[in-house]
Length: 321
Image: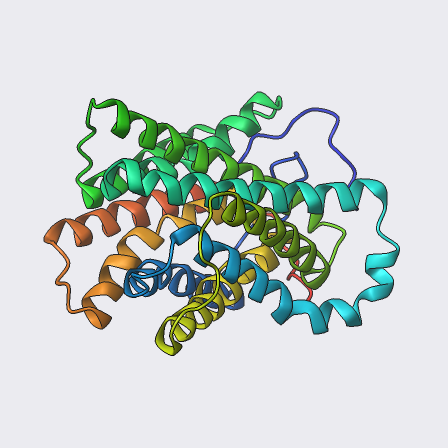
């Protein structure tokens, strides 16, 4: 473990959310490749879930977490000694991550029923702003380039979503839930960044996904939602969103949190917005508006500014497990 500096280092691409430097300097080709896989994975979530019209979004969230935990269970079994030896703090952080992930899914999916998709998308994407703000509130300075890149990237999200906030009580409630969803996602990401310093991806994701699935199951049952009885096509879509968004999306980014700061991970996740639009054009025949390309350029520019704010330290590669 790297010793904590005597004074907080400014947050940039090489500094983690808890002030430990050197986890994300010059990004390696392998890391970039994993980022691409992760972005494509999470970007497929929207188009796939749009096809599962007969299933409540909260039920899909339960199944993707539950099946995700089941899929990583063989790897977790291989890491059973590690799981058995987790300290109280390590286990607590894993459980906290699972609670935050469930809270994110619950608030986000409900918000989509109360406000416009554009508003909900723009607000939940404030996850990265929450990450930076929480980092700053923790006493760690944030370099100016991070703020500039963040503003530029979020501007790109607004260009794509064409957000038009409504003033109705119902829409405002949905906006508040989407904003909360972004906050919960930020805490989930920051927590993952801390726990992945000492715990393998397999152990962390298994506990987090299983905890999230259990809480979402309770929520589905409390809301009286059907979680079984789907046709073969619907089950196929649920399995597909699990493989794409949960395993190739969330799990890949959980792996990268060992070397990439939560700020960078959250910035990269903004690419889900134009990514989903472009994939919808390919698989659903929905031609993306010109704004998608302009917004994508702004997001990439903002991401480049944040990444190039690094101090030049060389990162280690996250161990494959």
